Each structure stands twice: as structure tokens, then as C-alpha cells.
Image (cartoon, rainbow, N blue to C red; front, side, top):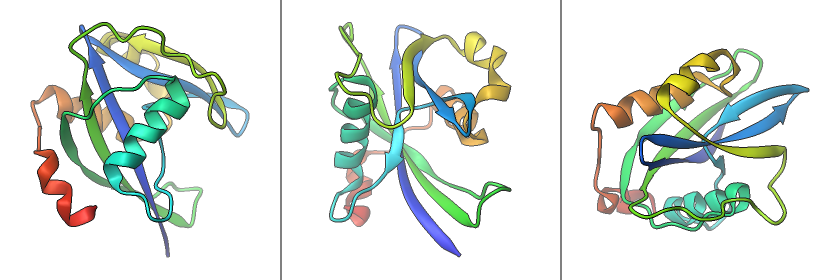
Length: 149
């Protein structure tokens, strides 16, 4: 069994969440800014890098939401996803990458209701689970990630 270590940025600002629109196997999907951790990279650096690459946004992480396991039915790999929270206190400004990463088509600031409307187009069930956990108030200190960085 192959395990892929990924990070996801949960970006919240004024009641909206930042999602990226991607093309995956010819279908439009919505995801948090996310990607694989590179060799020698720590989880926080990876989350910040993915956020910048996919959205053009630079922001400090504020908390660790949790770590999740996901095994897609169409894959031999299991994904270990660590979600990092970026609560923005000020307007995010421009958030379009100069050279979007991979299959990113666009960035969207969506309310929970808008995300629920496109729930069938989410990249994985983890997108919704992370949002539910965030809204439930789950917050872990970033210092708890020291075991992983």
C-alpha cells in the first residue's frame, strides 16, 4: 500500500472559504488549496507553498485542524492529509497565481451554503469533513505539529 502525504489549507475570511476549481480526469472539481509534501519539506512550509502556488495568496497559518486518512475507490494509494488553518483577519487582496499549479482553473470564495450546493463536485469527502470540523471549532496548536516537522 502506497501512502501519499498531503496538506490542505483551510482558508476562512468573513464567512467564506477559499476553494480552488480543478480539472481532474476531465471533470470540474472543487478542493481546498492542497498538494503533496515535497522531500525534506515540513508540513507548515508545504501548506504555505501550496496555498501560494494554487491561489497566489500568502498568509500565516493559525492552527492545525487535524490529520485525515482517505483511500479513494479508484486508487491503490492511501492519502494522509494534514489540514492547516489560515484564518484571515484582513482582506486577502489579489489571490490569483501568476502561473497556477497543475490543473487549477480558478479560485473561489464560497459560503458553506454555496459549497453544499456543489458537494457532489468536491474532490473528496475530506473537503466537506474539514469544513465541518473547522465550523465545529476544532483547533489544535501549530506547536503540536513539531513531531511531524
